[in-house]
Length: 41
Image (cartoon, rainbow, N blue to C red; front, side, top):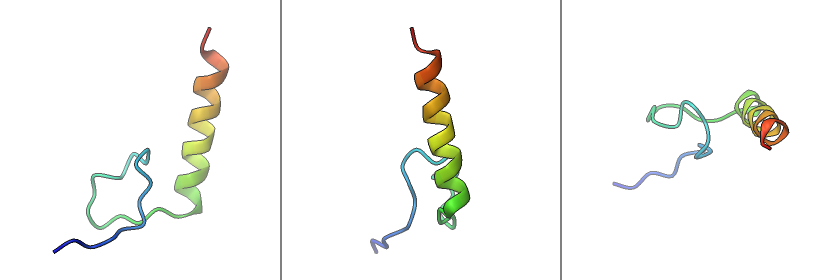
């Protein structure tokens, strides 16, 4: 029973089996990656 889900692996809600990523999730992921990149030496 393998169902395909619309979940980005970096999403903080990826473990929720009923969650499907929306634009909000992708925006949060992009902002987090940008912050991480800015603060890395």
